[in-house]
Structure formats: structure tokens, C-alpha cells
Image (cartoon, rainbow, N blue to C red; front, side, top):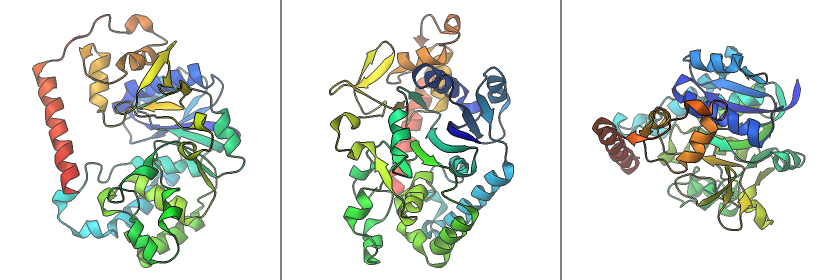
Length: 339
């Protein structure tokens, strides 16, 4: 077993993003830390080719563990009140495989950090590793500031149990796009206990109806209910720890192709390209002028090992592409309005 490693979740659909992430980890974190790619599904031809070209990258291949986590989440969501509602209200990620990232708790690394594939790593992980000495879960996001109506957990329902106050819950809200943790925190036996509470004791109703079938919302329940120490850098007493991370929301400064928080030039762990489609990155890499924040930084890391393959000039996006982007934005707004 390796003492520390990095996980991500990917398939051929997000190949361009995966390559960019791997290159950014090698450049900005370490070229020696082992990386394990968890298969989102079985579309892995390009992923396998990339793994074969790198000395420290492997594929998670314990399909029994993957299937066990799939079955667990399917059973949980089948018990959620939203399952009984009209199918029109199902979120876009309904029955996705995002929950496969949780196989990291049964993986090969004693301690690990998980990055979503639509991210770029921007600095070493020493402070995350240090925090894992005193906490079992490490996060770096601002989910704890979300309005109660869209928070991961239904705070009012949980407060009614008398087990937690809103203050208790708020400080433990987090996303699942970047986190540090340890192998063995969620054993087979503990997952059975969690499933019993969620389904039989109806604690599935603690998960906000707005976020039904969201891996992050389930993860929030799990980290709250297991009652293990959790640390979020955005709640750190050290102001240098509190930074942004979202490409489409936070202002950053580029210094030698490394991004820093604009306020105070504070180092960031990663930039997360949330809310962008993987096909938009594919079109960008093929030379289309796609409007993605910090796209030059993405292109730099995507073609870091083969700069000659980077598009020399971006051509205007086709009318089909522009129409598709506008249509997808409209669909996203409609989906948010009916959740």
C-alpha cells in the first residue's frame, strides 16, 4: 500500500480535461505522487493509452468495490421522497456514476486527495497532508455559505431531530470536487449502518430534495453522520487559507501559468471548471473559439507535453456550436427551476 496518492474520476468523454489535470499535478504538485484514475464507465480506450504513457498513473480495477458503491447509492436514492415524484423533475445527473469516487475509501492509498477531472491543480498538497494528521476529511470550498433552500442537507429537518443545530451542520457542509481523506473510514460494515439509517430510519429525508441524486449531497450526509473531525480551508482562522476555486465565479491572477487568488495573491489548491460541458473543452482543444473562463490556462496544461499540438489560432465557433451552447444554458435554467 502507498502511504499517499491522488484519485480522479474519468472516462474518454473527459479525456482532454483528464490530460490537463494530470499535467497540472505533475507540474504543480509533484511528478512522483502516484495517481489512480477511477473509471466513470467503461469508455476507457483513450484513458488506458494515457495511463500507459505515464509512469505513476494506474486504473482502479476492483469492480466488486465499484459495484458495491453503485448498489448502495441506487438503494439510497430509490428511498428518497423525490423518487415518488414526477419523472420530469429528475436532475440531469440522475443515475450518473459520480458516486464511484467513493471507492477511494477502499483503495490503495492510506491517505489521499481527490480532484474532479474538470480541475487544474495549482499548488503542492503539503498543507492538506498536514491537516490529515488531525482531521479525517479535508475540504476547500464555500458550500457552507449557501442559502438554506439549496444547501446539501435539509437543515430544518435535521434540527427537528435534536441531534444537530444549524451551526453544527453549517460548518460541515462541503462539495465533493476536491477533498482529502483516508482509506478505511467507510467500511462495508459502516456502510450497512449508514444504509439502515438512511432507508429504514428515513434519514434519507435529511438530504435536501433540491439535490436529489447528487453525490456531494449524499457525501455531506455521510461525513456529518459518521461524526469524524472535518476541516475546511475556507473556515480556517488563517486568512491565507481562504481562497476561491471556481473558474466561472472567482477572479484569479496568472503568474507563470499558476493561478493565485486575486485578493492577496493567495495560492489556490485548484481551479474547478464547474458548469462547463466536456464537449466544450473538446471543441476548444480542436481549435474552436469557445467561451471558457481561464481557457488559456487550460490549453497550456492540456498541451504541456506536446505544445506543438496546441491550436495556433482559435477559429470562430460554428453556428451549430453556438446554438448548442445557448440551448444547454436554457436547459440548465429550466432544470434548476423545477428541482
